[in-house]
Image (tube, rainbow over all chains, first blue to last red; front, side):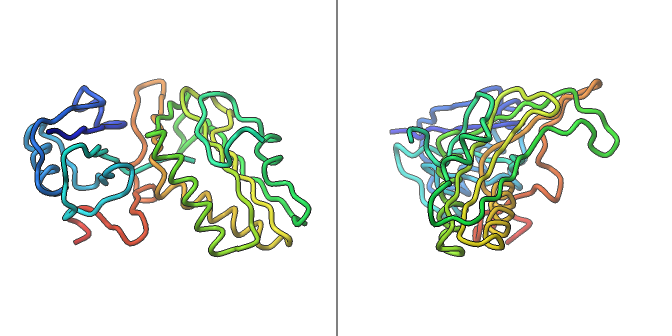
Length: 77
Length: 156
């Protein structure tokens, strides 16, 4: 049972990986963000989260098999 | 037509190909927006830009912008291609083509598309200067919240 985490742009550089398989599934997006902040010493306050390619709220529940992407403020165009 | 209406590519964008996707008999107007790599930003000289995307989601979000446009301007047809990878000064980063029966809607819908790209599409650019690099996205004007979904403690 695991979830896949994806990191982009400066987060990818800060963490040093673009993809992490996490063996434990936190209950919510908020809980996951807090764990990642603590583990990697990064600030995710302005970072959006997408679960399975859909933007998700902090209170969204996570389940095994989810792909969770951390999306810093975008700068396309 | 083999290429999708909404796509991310690593290759140079053909403006003509994007326009071709929206040409149709009902259209009396086609507007194009062409976003290019600028050399000077606030007096600082850019050497080149590196664009990165969460490609699968970015293409979905571009398609969502197309859907939003059809809700606001039902007669509009939209095609958007965004390039990623290393882009030099003057290179084309994004092309948006909108066709409508009348010109006003084509202008408005096209403007809407580029503003939404800067809000919800997971694409990032890294500035490369002579004296360093930085991922763009921490300025207020590019800080993004998707519609109705503010995130982060500063917004709760």
